[in-house]
Length: 431
Image (tube, rainbow, N blue to C red; front, top):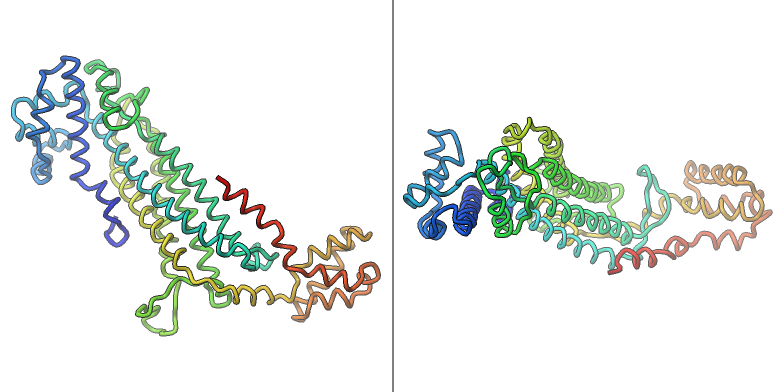
């Protein structure tokens, strides 16, 4: 991933030094287990720990000749350690190191993403509570529907990201497995107790059946979860972009004093951060299909998944990390305009009370079909003439013959639409 959309905390997980360090940790842990089982001489792991150094330049020089990354790595360690290094990797295969390392990198990345989500949740929750009763219009199909509150809008995103947190926790658990089972996964040349020791050392769990690779349905779940989280980010970003439109202007991304919106038009303040988030979400989702296709490997192993994972592993996690942090900052610094929300509520002259009138008419004897036709006629009149819906209702004798005017006026009450808000908040924010 390019530096522009990367944070060092997560991108460092995918740097060569961390990868090779994990490889070394796996090899040393396996050597420690083999020493305990008296498969290799005692003291090998200690010698490797004290002598081995990660020399990225040298590893790449060797790989350029041998065309095999694990062999290049082991050769470079052997050069530093000496004869004891010949006991490293005993009975193991490359996938034991590569797959266990990849899963650990995904786990490390996932744990950072969980922290990102926690910060985002706290930020959304704060805005939701602050604007619990800030009235705004709810929209369906982009059209004014009935009043809601801005806090409730925020609360829906809060719940969505709570679900995303649970999904990610589950996916991290799913991906946190270790395989040290040797060629085709039969343990023919290595004791299963070595695998158990390495798994415990790295805080992973043993892969029950690994063939020669860790099954890729685990990875597919992990990347699918990242794709879902990215889509939640996009939904949030799209909401803000729509609400920032000039015709709406209910919220607005923070705009700095020195910031400029357009090279041509000095008046512009564009929702560039949320537009960027929409684009980044597409990138993260693009990793999902390749991850699903990686499930179908040939027999006990092929490497058709390898190039895919070398790309999507870092790109998807780094991008999502950046996007979550950016979204948190957008929500924290969001300019929110309650007066504009109130103005937009009044744009349609009260027609969003149509359902309330409809229900009251059925209460006094109208059939639903009759009531709907009468209310719709008056609502359309308000739309077309930009006239008061209440006035049109009061002028309609079919209605006032059965419902007194003072009772009709009481139907046009905003508090009717907010009376259950507290119930929703209480069940959403309960421990």
